[in-house]
Amino acid sequence: MIGRTTVNLLRRVRNRLSAYANLLRLFIHGVRHGRHCVVHGKLYIKLFPSATVRIGDNFYFSSGAAVNAMCANRRGVLYATNHARIIIGDHVGMSSTVLWAHESITVGNHVKIGGNSILIDTDAHNLDYLVRRGQYTDWGVSKPIVIEDDVFIGANCLILKGVTIGARSIVAAGSVVTRSVPADCIVGGNPARIIRRLR
Image 1: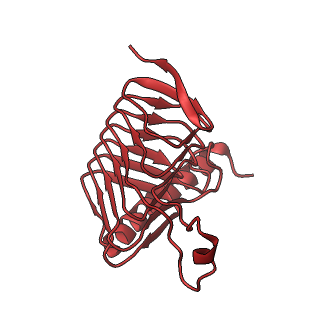
Image 2: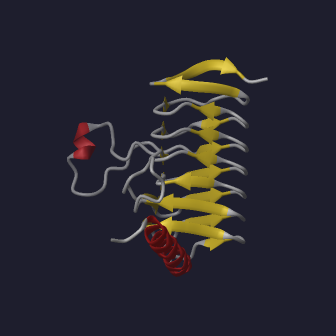
Image 3: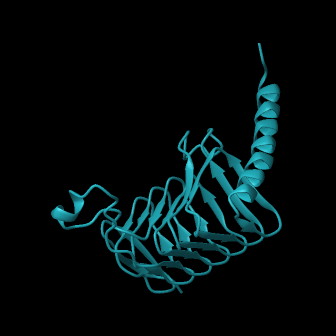
């Protein structure tokens, strides 16, 4: 019978190997990153030829493979269409997060994004049903997302197009953020509203 020590050792080895493999995959996709970039687990990467992804120093991303108990086996995603930009600052941590950019997603410094959250800067599909009937991708409206410094986004949140979350604000778990959030406050709900201001 395999003991807990052996299981934990095997998990550490798996995480170390996946971190090296993911660095190679980021390099192959042309993603520039700073020092100490660690991605554990299986990360889905889909970048169109003219997309840009830049990651700062001390980045940590856990993705699936039960690396984070909050996320079970859900994979994180980096998805950027043509001319889209994903810019991530320094000292950022994410768990099985989906970053889907059709225009731009900017994440500041010292940001934490909880398990299974989704940041998507487009409607993905057009609101006009006649356009949706077309043969090709029917992109809807896109507007940039900006997450300012020291923001904490809880687990299972959805951040929609055109949203700016002000510095040091907190988004409660399970929130759907449809409009911008000022600095120094806690928001929550669907749609997210200000619960209280932070001192």
